[in-house]
Structures are given as C-alpha cells and as structure tokens.
Image (cartoon, rainbow, N blue to C red; front, side):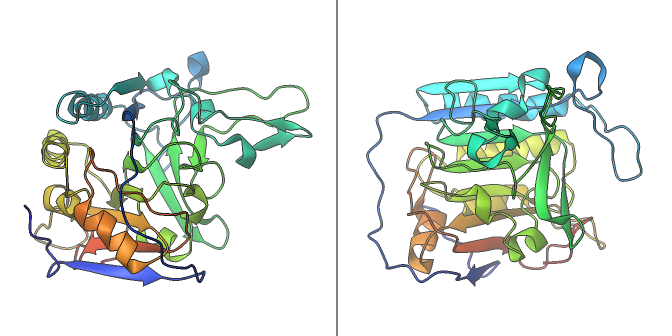
Length: 311
C-alpha cells in the first residue's frame, strides 16, 4: 500500500454550499467503460478544426498525441480489464461527442451535442481521456476556463451558429449526469489553478463525476511523459488515483518556470468525502461522491511551470 505524501501535497478547499454529510462508499457497478480521444491533425481543409498558438502560428501536429491515447486505452483494456474500451482519433474526435446538449443551444429550439451517446460520446464512460492542444483563460475579457481542441469542424446550418471546435469547461462540458467518474485531460493548462480558483470547472461536474486530472501550466510533448502515463496507470487499479498522479507526472527541474506540474481537482460535498476519493480510489474501485460545487485542488508545493504561476 502506498503511503500518501502529505508532506509534499497541499489541499486547498472551497465551500460554496452547505450540504449535509453523506455516507462514503463505492456503488455497485455491473461493468466499467473507458473512452480515449486524441487529436493530432489540425487545419480547415477536409473539415478539420483549425488551431493556432499564442503567436498565431499553426499548432504542432506530433504523433505523440495518438501514442498517449493508445497507452491509456491499452491499460484500460489490460491492467484494468474494463469491459468496454473505445478510442477515437483526429476527425473522429467530434465536438458533438463532448458537448452536453443542455449547455449548447444553437438557435430557437435547437441544441447540439450528444455526450451520453454510447459508444461515440464521452459521458457514457466511467473514465474519459483526452490528448491534444488546449489553453486557458483567466481574465475578465475571456473569462476563467480551459478549452480543448477537437478534430472535426461543423459548418453553420441555416438559422444556426457554427459548432465550436474549441470546447470550454464553463460553457460546453458537463460530465457525470450519465456515467462519468473521472477525466484525464492530457494537455497544457488543463487543470489550471487560476481557473479553479475562479470556479471555472464547477459547471462541468455533476452527478457522480468527481475527479479531474491534468496539468497546471505547460505539458511537454515527450515520450518520457508517455512512459510516466503508463507507469501511473499500471499502479492505480485499486488505489492511488490522485497521489500516484503526482508521483509519476510532476517533474521538478532546476531553474525557474520549467517544471511540469500534474494537478487534480476532486469534487464532493465534504473534505472527508473528497479525501476518501483522493487517497483510496482506483480505476477498478471508483469511489463516488454526491453532486457538489465544493472541490479541492491538489498539487505539489513549489512546482513552477511555464505558462502558470508557481504553486
């Protein structure tokens, strides 16, 4: 059994609602499902989504995005022995499959999205994985949010707005009202502290969804990170879903503004419930919590990445 590294972890807590304490525990579940997504190719030709970086150059298109998704899918199939595993790449990563229709109204009486669709959606699965370009905003002009780039562009239909290729945590995503428990967003700034601090992830969590894993600041596109992802998944079948994320993913380096900071958010009404998930859940033992906007932000103290404040 792993010993939690409380000496290296800080747990920030926020309360917005007074909610009674409920019993902790894991619900019975007939089978486990996972779905992996990766977007390598971008560009408006052939219906692909466009992507530009902060200096208005086309986003890079490394094959490693697809490798990350394959690594996740392999571990869910083998180590976790999930009964259903799905994987989609590039133009098969459709915004339609991520968007909760109740959150995305395109016109009078018209909604867009089917995140609960099995097997093409996201919220039908217990665990969701995404690898691709992402960015965050933390200002009064753009709001406080993380957005991820999907692979397929949908043009506007008569009387409707075009469906966005870039999906935001505060506008398009809502997981857990169907079946999702955990999401891993293997992308830069996917679990950014300033977004969490301004409630930018609250709208995406409902029902039994209670774990969001990602990065604060820049994530390097490297084979080393693929090895770390594989190592993380190899050891989290029955516990360590949060603690092992830091052990494997965070990289403290010499110098300033260059660390890789694995971060996590745990949703749940009480500290006891959130800590129970963080310290005892695994991918074959998904401990759920009741719906709540209360959450904890987990990180390694002192981690200082590019494109993010020092933690």
